[in-house]
Picture 1: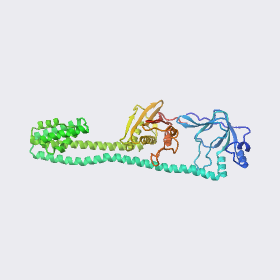
Picture 2: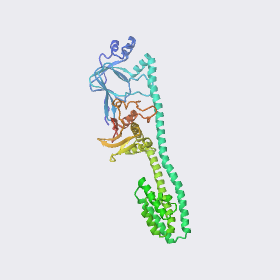
Picture 3: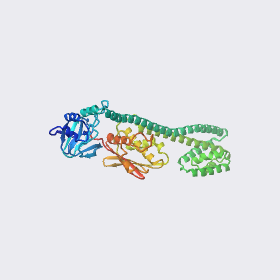
Picture 4: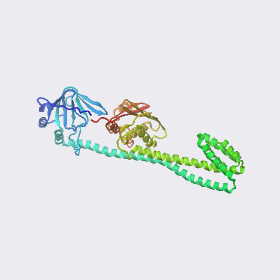
Length: 488
């Protein structure tokens, strides 16, 4: 565990500024003499040697800094890297406890960035308490406006964001219900048809027995039935055109050989992949024209029963996979933080968004299945996949290619979510991760902005989220570390 860098602020000589010195700073130039005197009495001057840390991101915001001389840089922590956001040597610029005047219900305020002196630098400093007091006492109307603007925006955004998330959850739930309804309805229909076919088989068996069929012939018929079912299970799949042609061939054969209702039985045999040769073989082995009609119908009932049971199995399997995908997506009954295969969350998210993706978008999964498990908060990360995939789908307007790719890059797993849409204009690229920024019409989207996705990846997982875009090829790249971030 590495020790945090110490901060060394040393007093300057003479240690204070005069009222006239303060008036030369653009921040204080319009204040009265009395106000400047009060500030001069409550503030002091401090210096930091070149290369030294002035304030650290995340520390309690206890001081308000005004630059007097030197060059400073502000940085934000992104994963394991410090990204420089501002570099300046302008006299009078301010940073630190800039919102100390906000009455924020006792929530401690912290520095939003780190500041480092690039050269020997001097500052005029006020405590956060003194700066907050003078702002509230001297500019009450401005403070009311600023508090209303800042806290009001924060509060309304929280309410709106929660509503948007509820709407997004409702849309996901509706999509899931739609996906579940199809196999459930198919299973219900197949069950009803199966009941009728089983009843028909019982009646047909009774007729066969009543027809004084010899026991050896009945056993032969049962053997034929099993052989035909086994042949149907191994038969190659046919296209719709091939199936229609096969139905015509089988129907003609049945009409020629006196099979009643051939038009109703032929589709069942065609669906099972049975051809005319198989029917001829059945006829030859029975060697009884009067038994052929009943045998064809009985075998047809058996074939259709098998097909209906396969339909029920497929439908219930689809329901089970959807429920499993929903559990994986929400991570019900699982710990908030765990080691996972990143592909599990991607696949469950694709299932949850299947109704949004639609038939016009081709999904390409280019997965590196050899990737190791990584430590993440799965439910949070699934929200990121939801947002990135939803953005990609909207960008393509219902037609195009969605490409999900995974690979390893140094000590990180990379997930690329790409689309073949028109791309992100250059003037927007640098703004996509800003809070509240969106290009979507009012009421559309997941309610989870890219800024929140960025925070989940960067702050929550020590990773990185970046954008590469050109017409026809836009990619959001999520980089996640292979190991737990080191404790500070």
